[in-house]
Image (cartoon, rainbow, N blue to C red; front, side, top):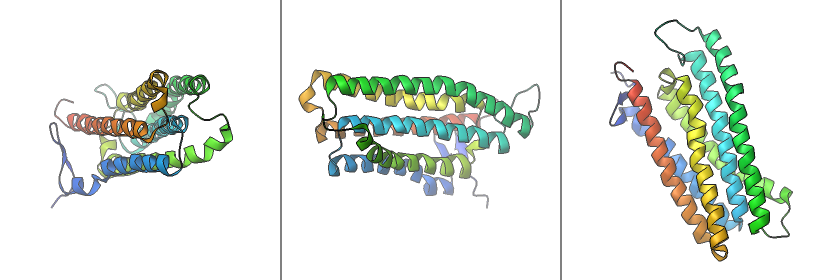
Length: 237
């Protein structure tokens, strides 16, 4: 019996593989719970928490580039009705697309990082005794949990569930911008809220609210991405 997962426009994936690899969504929840635990155990500042999610934006961009490269080699992201694009040509086009879109993506990351650093100085999101090098190890360590979560999604959904066969270049290029838009919005809301209610800024309750809201947003985007791949399976897509 064929155990290949089936796409449904309304329900997404169905079949025996779905139950096995729903771990991608579970890993997303666990990774963010891990970040919340680190916040509690190591008394992480709001500045460090914001930097963790800035790093996640970077990981999302990296994995999106990997997805486009993989799809170019074993999928058909440039499928069209006029001409066939060979894997070699697709890889060459994808490198050009990645380089060109990376300029806009890293500019956005740079602007966001500068805004975070400015807000940290203006609103004192971290203590005066904190030095930048003290943030690096903890921030990168926490962000590795999120890196692992996105890696699981890459393997479980994109590779094993065959999303690479359906991926299109426009979808993959837009993916990091859509996913990071939510994180940038969360960072902005955090900074604005700190400015309005500074006493609540570095409390565990505030961090918990931010992380829980982010998890719900991530799960929603995760479901939308699965639905978009499902729609590509429909006739005429």
